[in-house]
Image (cartoon, rainbow, N blue to C red):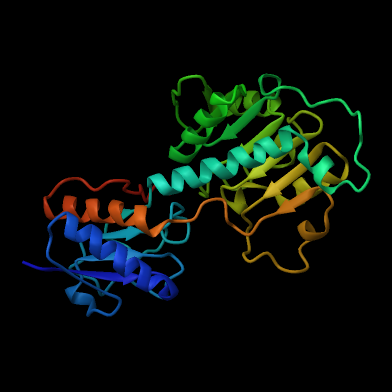
Length: 310
């Protein structure tokens, strides 16, 4: 029996996703119709981009699962019409892309590259930066993306401490949780990386009180989610020099408005939400595997806990 798969993603990416998903479905030997235009009551699976025009899942009475193309779920998880299981995207391409971006910017700040790249009068003879073993990195969020980034940084000899809401264990990483654990990570982070999901519990997790716990001159790197940071508190900390620099890839409003103060601040680097994008070739394999599992009555991978919000 053939199944029907609705693509409800970015229409500009339909051609590439059609090719990659069709190929991945063929490899698991399931007969399927993949289309971006199907009657709602005949759809078995929805491949979904939270920016999609599709926001009402009520008509999809036959759908066995909604398979997200994003790692983030804050734009969909609280949708009251979403009664179907929702699987977020966790794949090798996302993990590798995020790791490369995080490591690149940690090294940029660790090696103080901006002093040499942007300075019109290079400081010949200035002292070299410390070695990685003497630069402490903290990571808030030890899910899949946080875990692989932490491991990559420990492999470069950075001492890494990480915080998560529940207990975690990662070889070579000091893993902490709870309020005391969060304070401990903040106080020993010369470079702080934010990789938490956006939930009601994590909004403004980096507020004025917690920013003050960071060492003087600390660097903040946020490729996670914009609402993790109290923007007013961060700008105030940047202005008084307590935070030395902030490299921000995500924001509460995207694209970042032209008049946002982050653009003009000399100690802020803005990047346009590029830390890690979904790669169609690797994402298609994850989607196909979840469809195979659905047809075989096996548990879906990467299901979102709607109550927890991630």
